[in-house]
Length: 380
Image (cartoon, rainbow, N blue to C red; front, side):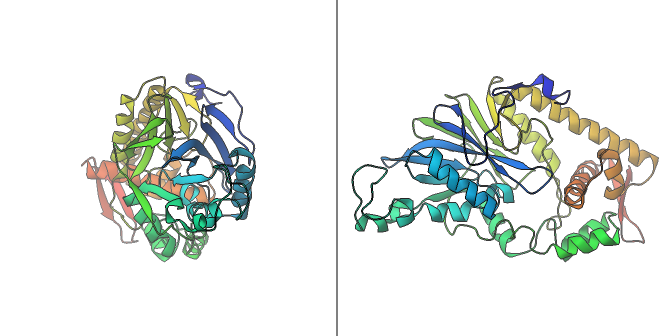
């Protein structure tokens, strides 16, 4: 546990759910954890006891990436944690692969005939089910997500975007990542997103800031966040004192805020920091359910920590640019003190560009394009 984590309170201590099983956080709220094949090796997912149109069941929040490992873990959850009830809907906080990946499989898995036991078998609702009931369209398990992230996911699943392919390689080279081996590997990652999100559900229910979702007996309010994803939705239940924060507030690491090749002059960091500040309106004793790390209390403290973190990074970047013009690749050595693998480097350089763009667009830095085709920034 690092120094900042000591200022937070972990509701369940060091307990984490085993893969394929759940821990109860509050009545009707269960915590799942699925593996990821990255340095950040897990994602937290959530099961919420629900009822839609008089039909009891469960809502899933976030999905994990598409992989046999994740599907197998979900099948264990279905067998052991649902009490024979169906999944009624899937809420996705945002379009990133670890959150969106299996949305297509989950919604298909729990729609139509697949949503109930075989014909003639016992129904989770009691009694026997008829063949006619199996074809009722109302039994579709719907994806709920912001429209912006839904459409971004559809685009990304069918075309290279973000952190792989020729365009991404050229973009990162223009910001100083010139190592030939790294550039070659980035060019080769032409299906980075689609490998983890091969398909997006054909229909969805739109979530917007301020929407209130009735989940069983509780209201959950949507809080839109920007900068990390196009239109990230966190969910707050005042009655339960819970915030499903997605990636907007994490206890151990700072949320990645990157500029990518499809919007090279983007300025996402002020959007993220403003979104974070709006969360201060929630009660200080809210139990935060993050996508990575462990559930914690200390929301306002963590907001302070993250704001201070970025203030310090801005100061470091300004100091470096005052000494000599800096590319984003140069700034990696300033902002990240540890060794990074290629996967981490692509995210880190996106975050370096985000800090540089914020200062440049605020008029604090000047940007120039060198004869070598690399952008460098210096103090205005």
